[in-house]
Image (cartoon, rainbow, N blue to C red; front, top):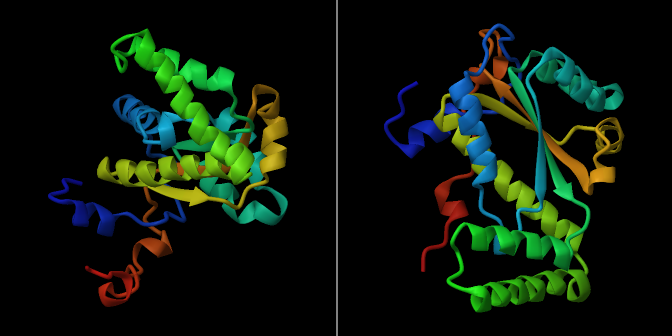
Length: 220
C-alpha cells in the first residue's frame, strides 16, 4: 500500500480480526517494528517498559496461553498472526533506574557535562516522586507511558502496511508467570498481534465510525 498522506493511513487501518497465517512480516519490517517500540516518547524519557516479541510458532503458543478460557476469542488472532508483541510495564521505578536512564542519555550526548547530567537525575526524581508520594499513582503513570507507546505503534505499523489488533483481553497474571516477568521487574499490560488481514475478515469490510468533528473539537 502506497500511502500519500496521514488520512489514508488512518482510514486504511482497523482492528484486524482475522490474519492470513501464510503471510509473514519481512526482516526489514521487523527492525522497523523494533524502532517504533524503542523510539516512542515517554514522560521524562522514563521508558518504563519491556516488549516480548513472539514470531515463532512456539513463541506464539506461549503467548496464546494468556488468551485461553474467558479470553479464548483472541486465541486465533495470536496463533495466526505473523508476530505478536506483549507490552509490559515496570513494576517499580526508583532512583537507581532513573540514574541508569540518565547515564544512557549522557552516553548518547544529551548532557554537555556532569553538572547537567546530575541535574537530569534530580529533575527525573522530582517528577517521579510526585507520582510515587503525592499522587500515589506511580504504577498507573508507568502504564500510561506504555499506552503512549501502543498508540504510536499502531499508527507506525499501519504506515508500513502492516495490520494490527490491540488486545487487552489477556490473562496478565498467567503471562507474568509464563514469562517470569515479575522476577525481572515487569508485568504484562496489553498484547498486539501483527500481520496481514485475511480475505474473510469481516471487519475489513465495515465502514469506519467515529464521532463527528463538531462534537470532538473546540477551537479557541
